[in-house]
Amino acid sequence: MRVGLFIPCYVDQLYPRVGLATLELLTRQGLEVDFPVEQTCCGQPMSNTGCCDDARPLAERFLEIFSAYDYVVAPSGSCVSMVRNHYAELVGDHPHYAAVRDKTFELCEFFTDVLQIERIEGAFPHRVGLHQSCHGLRELRGGRASELMVDSFSKTRVLLESLDGIELVELSRVDECCGFGGTFAVAEAAVSTMMGRDRIHDHQQAGAEVLTAGDMSCLMHLSGLIRREKIALHVMHVAEILAGYEVAS
Image 1 (cartoon, rainbow, N blue to C red):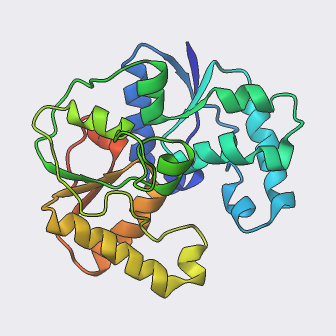
Image 2 (cartoon, rainbow, N blue to C red):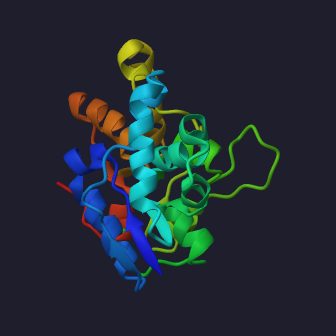
């Protein structure tokens, strides 16, 4: 199985440790993993702000680069959702679109849905709060959204719970938005900040030591608030936890 590793631009530039953790997790499964160096942004920021003409060349480039792989895996629900759910609006008639769409997966859903893995060997003896990002939860169906009348499930939680010593704390509002929303955090800074503070408070009252999620965009927003307000809460991407990385001091 040949996997193309797609690393979102903000992870590549600001959080390279998340990319390395993702690579480690995939190679431990005996997969042939390639990181095509010519990859660029998937085009989501431009598309979300209505600049479709600017997003289209990036989407076309993504399809050309990753069409050669059996699967495409990324540590980001929002970027994967862009490819799977929104590329049709930009490049619906592209010859590679349908094939790339169907083989592009977020890291945790790739483990649970494709590799059929339910246990990751390792330990993480900490109290962890899981933030379920909106794109991964509602667009990729990585878990049960509270507005749906279906059985409760979470693909990310299954993997985290398999680690020895981990304790996943119970949040009062398990699937509330963090308030980031890309340019929403700029255009509506006050609302975005209050939403972020609400999410942090929920993790605090639950007794979390570490706040985790499958999207560094959400964690980037929350960690900024945590640092500025000097809150005793660590932030780690789920890939870092599953790969056995230590909590940063």
